[in-house]
Image (cartoon, rainbow, N blue to C red):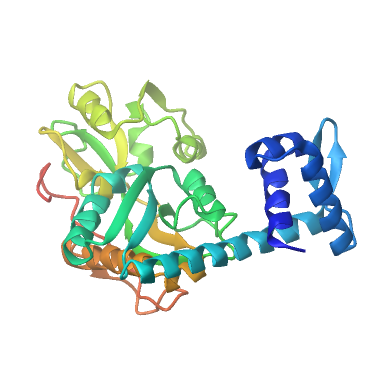
Length: 328
């Protein structure tokens, strides 16, 4: 086996055909077929089988692709580390982050890096966690800022990667301050069965929770922009759900937000290949993220039990029971 053969296998796995893999790699189709034959001879077992017009990896093929991802990560880390050393600890870090963190946490991180490590260049891509995970695994980003719910199992694709826990935040009901339930400290979803909703397009968990409580939510608007959601709620069209992190950036005057009772916390964490910790620019970026969370997010330290990687879990828990805009 050699690295080039593994790259061909990884691309065949991603595209599902020799022809598409050849186009992506800039090879001819016969060259891809030759590399795959050589690799299968080295392994001593089939790596792909034909299914209809496409190809599907065998169990051995999937196992080899997982190892290939780790190998590619180590090579990228080596390249980054050497480049950073040559550039006196500078370098490029490609960040991938979910929407609400792009308007709250990431601007603070970039500002801090610009002050403390001006030689580090940052690019930022907004992506939902499922897409961000793919970008980090494939090497199209060095560091991901992702989130998932505390009652979820480890997301697929993170088994061999490193998670650095940052904080948790709560799901809140967003409503006008004249709403009949605005005076409550917390609100149960069942109490909102007769409400009109302004919701994001990805709302499977919300819909399932409503179904489990015996009602079907009346969604009157589907919007994927946080400010647009707030504006529509302020107009009286309906109520919505948003996480505390998004509400730290800006709250439209006249709105209040109350924690949703009995809803799991959302965990925010950094995701990367372990080898990337050896890259000075990546390590400096991680330190900047952790520093901003500790100093500017006024975190409350969670349970004494540390995260799996040995770092304490930070619990982001700003109060949600004050008037709209009461906290930054």
